[in-house]
Length: 196
Image 1 (tube, rainbow, N blue to C red):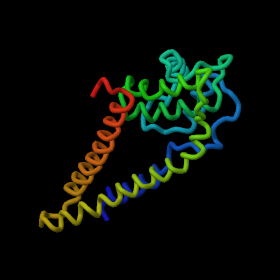
Image 2 (image 1 turned 60 degrees about the vertical axis):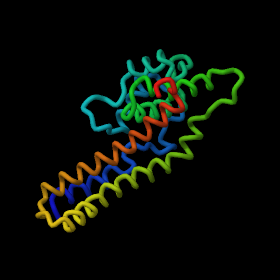
Image 3 (image 1 turned 90 degrees about the horizontal axis):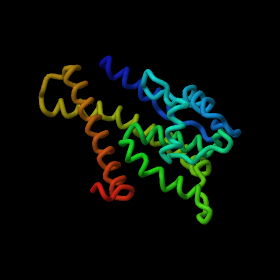
């Protein structure tokens, strides 16, 4: 087994559900912005040197209408779960696209007439789905190695670790691009149709 295969296997195990927070791990009590930032910094590893979120970023989310204003400067469980969604959406979509996705939910929550959307309830049902999707993505990355090895065997090219790794990386990039293209098109069709 090539060194990169062993490393990929370790990564696949480490990354499965890595940043999916169990529903019961979200704070039950309302928190101040700095406490929310601390909560996410202790739970998320978004593969970056800077913190996952800061107090200023949370304030900016409120100003931009990505989350409803806090009650007496405290953010409840729904706020915190909304922030989790925003953090993941931000990794994949442009800031204005994230705004387009989140604003209808904020408008719903702030409406006196609509039935309120419950992010806590949604997350409690979808948390296990997110973990399963993470596992499927890791399994797909591992399966890519076998697919690449088979393709190399069929072409008769010298089986070289650097060629395998190059093709695995390319395959993973294609999978990511396909998923992102589908996501961007869905977003623009239903949340920002003027950009089509």
